[in-house]
Image (tube, rainbow, N blue to C red; front, top):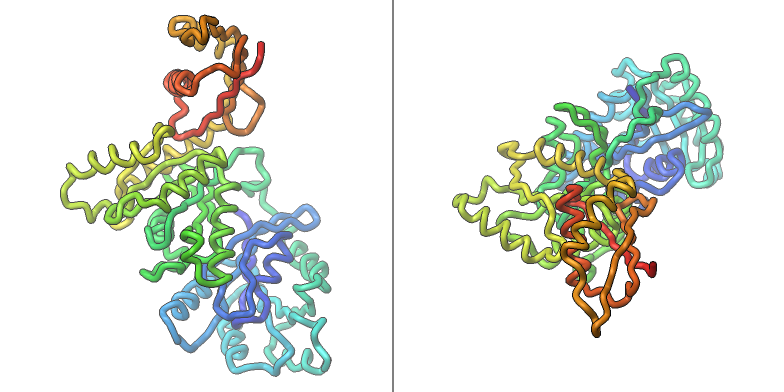
Length: 438
């Protein structure tokens, strides 16, 4: 199993900045406003050939001023429980605060390796502030600057030295096995984090009825019921004119980036409000990025009349047309309905995305269909298609060679797409068809 390293500390000591520095890119949202990070955020780090998983946590507090403070503290303790090594980050620009002492007492009770990491040394004027933090009683101490990277190399050397001894060969990041990445996306408050918590059977991500609770895109490895995948919880995607603050803007951008980096997207739709214009906008983002897609009509336990499900499904197919060959599941995290079924379908779609059809087989199946139902004459000219092939792209794209490619009607393109879907089972997968001169 991959070794886990948590970054903990009070608010605004630079945890997310250090997290981004160590994994090598900006994954966690960084802002001077405290309390931006809420859930545990996971990222993979490689140093000197050793892989480990890094966990960014929300700032610990003992004052619960709002609904999120208590939940952030719960995530803090979850991170401590699952970690092999803990980086206790402090800010020496001020003297030791009471909350720093409280965190150190919690950490001293753990039978785990703890590093005291003194951050922001580039901004420090009085060096004696550093030695004051030695009072916290940790033997392993490192002075760094997460902004410019000073001292982080030495810190990483020490971390991987511990893991070298117990390095595992079962790390899924090191195998050549394809692990599908499934993004859980949708509008705010449709139940994305609750769905992941239900699948994992633990409070992995913070859940509340306040929209905008999830801010970062959060990844977690899932291995149950014969399923292996990476689940990505994303922030709710609002319309541009409803985004009120910079943090929310960056959250939405991260969610869209997660769509682009995923294999399959599970788009959650609220069963009570139905499919709204923003749901369709998200659907189009997924389709335009050529990602596999499944529609989950969530909170279906609130639908009292089951006959309404058929009407709901029919209405959605009409809204998403012409790309309506999409799996639709009515799900409930409360009743655990269709969650595993939808995941298994998503895995099948992810592997189908990688399928490359042999040119000989493609022509053997498609050319008789085309010859049996040829393109109608254009100004008395016969339109012929003599050859087809799949392009070597990540998502399924096909090229058909014709004597008059520019004259082929959209209706005939849809006919060919329909037959490709029927014969090769591309359900839930956007496919692109190109016509070129023979």
